[in-house]
Image 1: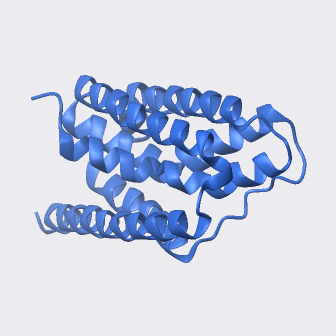
Image 2: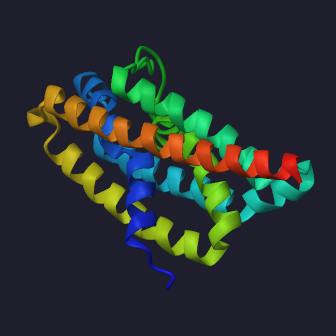
Length: 194
């Protein structure tokens, strides 16, 4: 089956559109058109994710990387993102720049950062490109809905509540990272023993 609620949920948690709320609140206070920035950032992040889904598996062959090595490396990156999300480290600068800079920051690394790219690459290699692309589309529809709600209610968003929910999602990211690393290490150990 191509449509996987589990995969959609994992992608949505990795994309974590709620993590963009503090950034959007700062932009709104500066008088930036947050609806335009959010909409364009979601499209840009989707384009980046789609490119990774298409090109990622080829990079395995190009660099001679095994799935298990990438699981461990990707798990470390996802773990770092999870820990950063739990701690609430959000140091993206809104001091200078124009809307194109803000779109770039929001699209990557906030929405489609290294952890998301690692996960998409590995999942495409394991599950197939078509399955990942279909589930990416659905996950990004969810992201677009959340971003639309955020931008419509930006002046009434409770940043503390968003922070709490985002930290809970960070805990799930950390657990996903542990699973990825355990599976990768198990595969590497079995390959070394043979």
